[in-house]
Length: 513
Image 1 (spheres, rainbow, N blue to C red):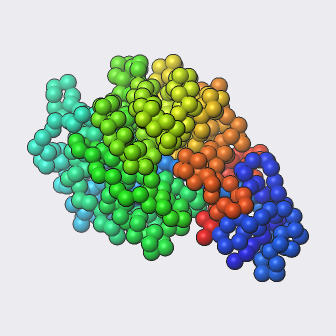
Image 2 (cartoon, rainbow, N blue to C red):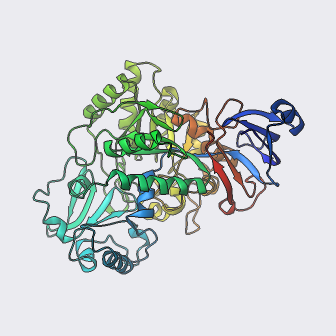
Image 3 (cartoon, rainbow, N blue to C red):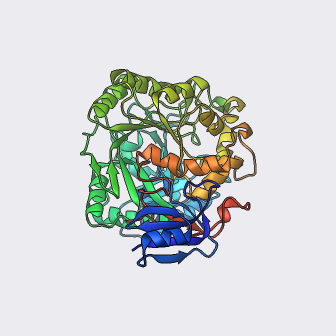
């Protein structure tokens, strides 16, 4: 159906530029201009859509959000985000286990030790008091660290951590129940796999939640083959309401052998053309790989891949036409990733454009090389708000003052895209992320890296066209220009008229088809 949107604030490029009306025909932008001009061009069949003073912008993109995991917390897994003590966590685990006697494992996610009254990581004995009769696996909010109860150890004859992971022990050499990074695979391989029907339920729940926040396109990074098959099935059945970029993982946690490259796929609602690697761990849990140590003898984090192994796999992927996205937060990890990307560029000069996910502590030379190689930065300003207290607790000032340096990234000419990485964080509202890039204040009201603030227009671009560029769809998405998809969001207020961005309500959002 032809529609002409009018009587509102229409911003086709998510900037201060406005047009009077926008014409949508067959799911694509057919024109912009005055209402009379567009009515004349469209003919009598076009329906007028009165915005009643609301704002219309390109739909938001989230180019790094674990879609099925967001859905898992909405359907199956216990959500512990926001718990304020180990005692509260135990009570919620106990109640959840009582409500679900049929479940062979009790699974939960979301604690952050910095926000716990006890001020420490929970351990196996804490979980034993909550769930003594079944194996229990509780993932930290970052998903790079998890805690298990004692029953899990009865299924683990081998406690040797694989390269790039830890099975933590106390001063007496006893296991604490804490596993990190690749060692998580020792446990996750024991947990019963989700059925295709369960994955479908999670994805359906998640995409509805994303549309409520105005997100019309999302990248699910680190997808295993069984989930990839579900995405293909849902796309074939016409069940995808937002545009999905499914990013297969190559080296799963605990695995010593890479997974085979799957078949690439492109349709209007599903793209599979980028593979995912992990170079280091998470910053809020002190496993991101730094050149200088964390505060108070916290070590320097964990490198997950040997450079030769990483280069060999990345070279095979690029030769087969795959773009590469690599999780790298710490400066030591960024060193490794850019060395590999530079070698890939030497082999195939100015070939495919690759990505670095997160990019916590790039040095100026890193940013210059990223610009030269055309590497995208896909980062998460919401981390500054929700995880800022962790950064202030764990990072020396040398790092804290330049964590996620968005001003430096843009000034160096590096392409910037914003995302949420949910459910690492609870709030995946793009407007909240945009606010955090502009204000850089954490949940306790503390400013972090004030010199790295960017403007509202720059932040909006990073959540629209910048994100589409990182996803590789900027020719058809990311702005509301003629010929592009009519992926749009209608907001009750305007981000350009002042006021709290996070309080602006999404009226509607759609991925045009």
